[in-house]
Length: 335
Image (tube, rainbow, N blue to C red):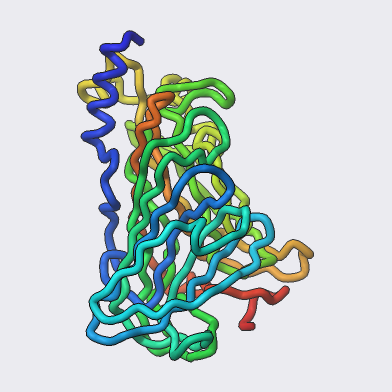
C-alpha cells in the first residue's frame, strides 16, 4: 500500500475511535464503590496515568489492590480521597514491582481496613503512554479506557467483593466486541496489529479460565473458538483466533461491498463475543462453572503506533454470579 493509502486508513482509524475513551453500555457508566482498571505495566519505559475521582460529598478511604500476571497474588495500599477530589498517579510511582496486570480499587471503612462499604461515588480512567504491551515493535503512543465500575447492593464488609448481583452488581456473562479489523498472520507485520486483554474474575489467584468465543465476519458467518488464561493475560488478537486474520476472512463468505469506503484496501472487519465456560485451579482439584471474565480490545495501526481502546459491551446473567475480587484460596472461596 502506498503512503497515501496508509494515510487514508489512518484517518478512518481515528474516525473509528482512536484516542476515544470508552463508549460501552450498562452499569460501567455509573459511579461505583469498586473500580477495576484493566491494565498496568511497571516493566518498561511506558507510563500508565491512572485517575480515581470522588464525586461524592464525603471523604473516603480507598484500598488499591494490584494483581500481577506472574503470580496473581494481590498487593495493596491505602489512600484517603477527600470529597470532590481526584487522585492521579503513575502506576510506577504507586507500585514498585516489575510486573503488569490489573488494578482494582474500592471504598473501605478506614485506613488499613479491607472491609468494603457502600459508596457509589467513584469514577476512574487510565491513559497509557509510550507503552509496548506486547513487547514487540514500536511503543504505542497512547490509548485510554474508563475504569469498570461495580455498584454496591448489600455489602458484607469482609474484604471479599462478590460481583454476584447481591453484594455488588453482576460481573458480565458475555462480552460483545462490536468491531475488529482483519489481522495479519502471526509474526507478520500488518496494518492492524491489535491486542486483547483478558481478565478472569472467578476463582482468584490459583484459577485459570476457559472462555468460548464466537467470531463473526461481515456477513453473519460465525466461527467458534476458545481461549484459556489465568488472572490476567494480554495477547495479539491474531493468536486469539484464526478467524480474526484478514486472509482467513477474505476466504469466507464475506460481504465484498464492506467495509464501505475501504474495499480497495482488502481490509476485512468482524466482531466477536466472549463467554466464560469454566475456571479450574492449577492443581486440578476445583472447577467453577460459568465464570465471569472481562476483556479489553486495543486496536493499533501498524508501525504508526496509533491506537484506540474501548470497554466491551456486556450482558449479565444470574447464573454467572461467581465473580469476586479477590480470592487467594485454593478452592476459589472467601478469604
